[in-house]
Image (cartoon, rainbow, N blue to C red; front, side, top):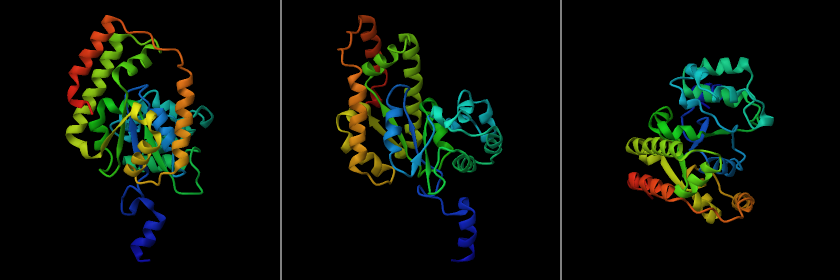
Length: 266
């Protein structure tokens, strides 16, 4: 090992940067209730990947500004038992004092009890809110870090929001904000954005997950798809009753949204 190699062994951030050495392996985003949690759970079956429920780092302009990003800053300090990151206030201060996002993520790997420190691991940064400003979010990470955007058909997405007491007006406003964010990001980062259809993932988890694991450069195993099928079936069993028909107002608004973003259909 040459002198640089010896130094790099002690200071990982000096190694040649790649998808295998960077602290973040993949970014997962999509509109709320579009399947981001399901997708991140399926990805985290790989022992190399883990995370708390949501990260939210890149909503800030710099690590120092993350203290003002609510509720993600608070979530970082909630316990792992609540599916969060379990970072202490002292360690959060160190993370937010980082000079770069790479340094902040490396500290998160070091300080969060989410991670098994006996083996190399990377972060699966799942944050739905990223989609609304995805162009600036991806500007903060190297080009080799892929971004998975999961998307649900607009009718199904509206039903998911409606069950959670969202108004059609709020849903429409957010749908426009998030899809405008995707449109801007595709203009600058198209090569690293990979769009995943929620319905396609549910209908064929083995083949869709095999494609996704290829995108992020990790080995796919059949048990990942089997786990996905079990999760999807469990979720579907909770919605055994046929959906209520949509009103004329709902149908007209969803058609308007579909036409407004016809260029994004895939």
